[in-house]
Every structure is written in C-alpha cells, then in structure tokens.
Length: 94
Length: 484
Image (cartoon, rainbow over all chains, first blue to last red; front, top):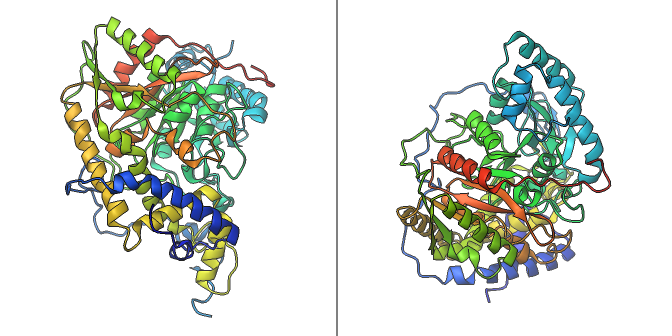
C-alpha cells in the first residue's frame, strides 16, 4: 500500500478545482491504480539510457528562424477574450 | 450495387473506367450515413454540403483524365482530434466545443493534395483517453455489429463509420491501441505505423512519445495506400523520422513468434483460439510458428499508465482558458484556469491529469515515472533481442470480443486491461496491425495483431495482405434498427 495521496495538493499542482465528491472518488481511484504499480516500482531495473523518442532517434530540430505560420488574427481567432490584438486575462493577483 | 465496401483500388478503377463518378459515391456514402448515424453516432459532424462542389470537381478531373491519384474522390472520415482548417476540432471535449482550427494537420494537407473528400469528424473518447468512446462528452458511439456494445476506443467513431459504410476509410490516432482495438471490435483493419513515420503535427497531443496517426480501413491494401500517402519527414514535427535502411523481415518462409504472455490469464478462450487458428493457417503457407517469451509485456499496463498520464498532464496544461477553448470566469488568472479546467474536462481526463501530476511530483518521480522509463527501455531491448530470432510477432488484438456499455466503466483496471495486447507496440515504437479473422461465440468480430520491427511497415503490410487473403474474413454487420 502506497502513502495516502494528498489529492488537494495534486489537484492544486494540476490547476484543477475539484468538488468534495470528486476529491473522494479520485483519491480512491488513484490509490487503486497506484497500488497496481507496486510490482513495477519494486522491480530492480538497471540504469538504462532514456530517450524521449521511443526509437532513440535524434530530434530533427528546425533552424532557429522565425516563420509566419499563423497570422496575428488567426492566432487570436479562438481566444475567449482579446483586445487590441492581445489575449486578455483576469489579473494575476487579487 | 453498393460501392461503400469496395477497396480504394476497385473504386479508383470504376472512376477511371467511367462506371462510377465521385459524386455518385459521395451521394451513396452520405445516404448510408443518413441511414446509420442515428443508431451508430460515429460522426460528430458531417461535411455533406461542402463536398458537393468537391465531388463535382473530382468528376471533372476523372472525365478529363487529370485525376490527382488513387485517393482522388475517396470519402474518408477524420478523428476529431486531427485539425482541418475552418472546422471544429473538439476532441469530444466540452473544453474545445467552440474551437475552430485555423490550420491543417500535415496528414490533412497531404490527403487534400491527393483529392480526398472528408466525410466529417468522428467521435472519440475525450482527448483520446479511453477504450470504449463512453468518455465522449457528446455521447458514445455504438458498435455496428451490436449497438448494445461499445465500438472500442478511443477511435471508436472512426472504426464504426468504416464498418457501417458511411466512409470508405478513416484516420485514427493510436497511443495505446486506439486504432487497433476499435478496428478489432468493429471488424475492420487498423494500422499503427512505426512511431515518427507519419507526422503528428496538427494532432492534438495526448502522450507525445506514444501518439501515432494511422488508417482504419476495410482491407489491408487500403491501409497501405493511406499509410504511403501520409508518411514522410515533416519539419513541423521534430519526432518525425527520415526513411532509414532497415533489414526487412521475410515474406516467405518467415518465422513468427506467438507472445506467450499475451496468451495467458486475462485473455478469453475465443481470442486465444483465433490466434491458434491463424497460426495454423500461417504454417500451412510455409511459415514457422514458435512461442516466444517477452516477460516485460506483463508490466506494459503499469508502464503505460505512468508514462501516458505524465505526458498527458504536461500536454493538457495548455488548456487554460487563455489562448483557445472555453473559459469559465474567475477573479484571478489562476482561479479562471482552475474553473475552466474543472468545467471543461470530463472525469477520465481529470483522473489521468492527476495521475500524471502525481507521478511527476517531487518525492515520487523516481519511484514511478523514472522507473517506468527504465522499464520501457528494458522492454525495447527484449523486443530487439526477440526480433533477432523471429520476423514477426503475433497476438490477439484484444483480450475479448466487444463488451457491453457500462460493463467495464465501473472497473477502471479492467477497462485499462483491454489495451494489454496493443500497448507494447506503442511503448516500443514498432508498427502493428489488427486484421479481422473470425467471429467469436457471440457472433462478434475477433482479430489478430501482427507486429514487426520498427521501420518495416510496408513489409508488415505486404505480409498482412497475404494473410488476409488466406483468412478471407467477409462477414459484415447487420445494423439493427437501421438500413443494412
């Protein structure tokens, strides 16, 4: 059995507001899944070379040059709120 | 005569011989959609009106002998997590219910260049997270073989519309089996190419080291045509690969390994018998069948459900109510984000974001995510060693035939286990195909999965074509309550 999951803290890290009912259900569901991982966590595995590409292929990065892929208007076309060609968000502090 | 179950090359020949026009096929496919969609709910949106002119243009090209290629005028459905400029890309989520894509995914650009007509966008589990389409915010898709059963997922809509005949083929995305599992449940072919061979640019990311776009089709040849029209390096996708010279598996007198661990507990008798039946057929064709052991496949569910949610928690952080998607008001930016994500995401997506956040958090990273990455690397080694001994690997595609709605939705681990056979190909990056081969004792489709080393996709498809011709699976669903 793993440590109790601090669901409130994990939800805060994930920027997800949960209801009390969701917190209770998700805490139970996640504990069950994490318990299932125990066999993997306890395996003695050698240090392997880790790659974010499953085939280990080097990433082919583009040249560091700006290209216009979307126009300013296209980039803003799905914004919930925009003004003067910019995204509008609520203040960062109360 | 119905044409919606003909192969792409058969349709193309009829077009060229002037025995069928793209506009006639267009009418037939949309009529089929009108007769089946009320039961199946495979398409979220149908592009009927906007295709009238495109079909007429394709008619003219064939009349003038200026057709763009074998896919010109072919109606293909697109999973609703792949962007088509000017159309909604909802990912079956309330979060993106109003999102209109301003650009085409690379695969869409390629298919447009070949004259493909898009029938519409198809249903999926929200953000491609699920195995049944029960997680769609817009209601589930039903299995054409039995509407009381799931079509699989997450590309359930894409598989169901091909099975039902309201598209000639479709595109899906496969992160842990999301093309192959629904293809198996709906009795059609599903192909997940080698990671990186088909650009992911314009596919809404779920787990970037696992996601792959691929075709769902009525036969292997159609998958081959679509794969070859979509593959190729894309400068917009840093993980897309350039063609490399790879030793190809044998097409004749090949050695085929049955994966021992995928023929044990948790796999239904029907599914095991299907693999044994196909193995005997392959033997009769001169191939050698051996049993191989890949012990880490037993761990694949745990490895996957650590890596995929970790990547998902990072990828889905972009849905914050600022640049796109819906927004729910808040007094501060952070409160707005929390409110937006609380309302926009469904229960399964929330669960996976939290699981990934937990696995990546301080104090747990090494024990969970770090360990999963090590196990993934070990698993890749196991497969590399095994492919020194065999040309192909074979297993069931799914542990059972299609399950009923609600049957697994209360048991999350059992639901996750339905991807047991398909996940290894995503973890290792190799190509894998699901081919329908028979019916279960319930009269529902069963398939086998064939895998081969990375970058041997066309050889795997050629080998699968030969197997398909021997298996000769010709059963079609009778859509109850609709017009079959």
